[in-house]
Image (cartoon, rainbow, N blue to C red; front, side, top):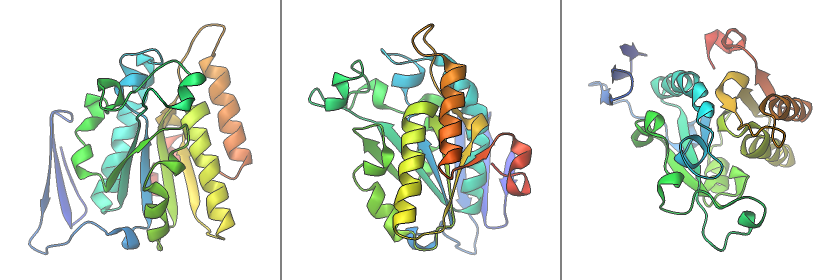
Length: 231
């Protein structure tokens, strides 16, 4: 499959196994932080939540195809693509409230193979030690350098924890600085885990999406709601 915007050509072989980006003779480069107008954040699509471990739920991976399409759109436009993964140590205070998961340098802290193929083309990658990506080392500084930023798109898991905490904190961060930046959460590209009786997926998704919408986050419930069929 070939996707092009006249500046960058992206070739996907088998849509999973190989991705190459070729620059044309125009020598157009991907945008620097201060040039980015749209930023996509991929949150916690790592093995510890999707493949193995105490908090893993493989059904979360059903959103992978939709996430891939959004990543491709961002890359084709040369906009910002950021990966954020959980990475804890035995001293992480979060582990007093959650089972041990995603320890630093473990397989659990690495992006699932279906999306890891995109990491080489990320603007930056961050590791967080809390449920809010805003406080991942370096992420806030990167945001402050994006002085042309108009839109942030957030995808990944879990809807009611790390997605919601990041989206609402980011909304407050932008408001504090009087930055009129839209934050978008495509509901078809976020998901949470399910544990019978303890953590009902449908209920938690509904609650989190309502809280985000009430906090000023734009929800895209179907692909058709996206501007120019995006996101």
